[in-house]
Length: 125
Image (cartoon, rainbow, N blue to C red; front, side):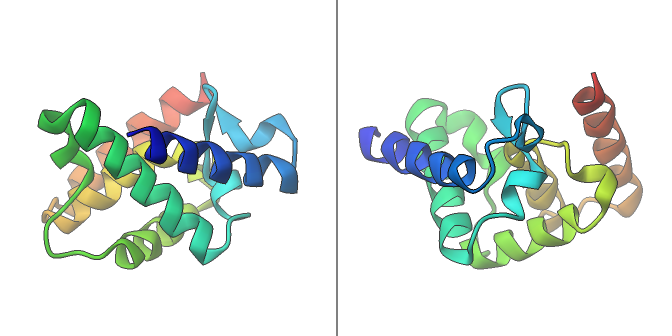
């Protein structure tokens, strides 16, 4: 677990080094503006770290952020598409991950729209 925390810290630090603007964070979490600054390797590392930490700390909730049969690079591409919509950029990465997972699990477009609208409202506060 310590390794996963270190990886996330290094990845987040890398995003901060590229741009120290607070606009890359929402509620002290890296958001879509930070995500688009990351390289593919950084995205893979960040997502792997999130999943490792969740499984170590809250395995019962980790399934909400992970779907068997989908690779991390596929998840990253899904998040790239999510953040291609400018209104989603303030949403923290971990919540974009939950939308991606819901999509992979077969959520309807109406369900995804509702989840995303709620996340936008929360991020705007």
